[in-house]
Image 1: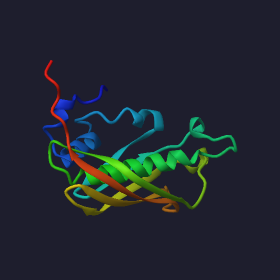
Image 2: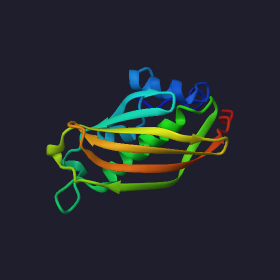
Image 3: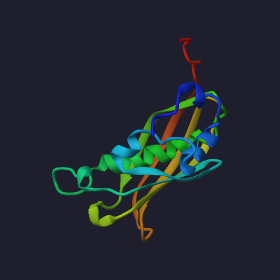
Image 4: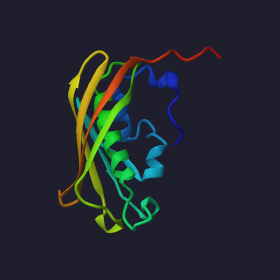
Length: 157
């Protein structure tokens, strides 16, 4: 499924966009295919992503690269912030902090990342996240700070 056109994106609130990705009305971000992750659910101020780490996500020491957990957490926390933004507003990560608790392998199976907004101001928003396995064991935690800004209107064609 192709990415959503920028002018279509500008007409939806962040919550509409993320919920549309969760229920299939909008395509997910292309990185979702690469990282084997997808939006699991979303509401005002929270988002979940599910993922299934595979051998393609391994590092040289035989476990899933820490960047996999960081990507899931960055995605769910940023998208949680997105659910609080009006149409025509974007965000970008300013700061990302990840704490790793346990390693992942292909045997870990499906994992769930949940992001929740802590504070959402006009220019800066913060969120926290957790990454757990299918038995609820904590794999990693994270916090993020994001810059909030108006999206530029698409250039005339």
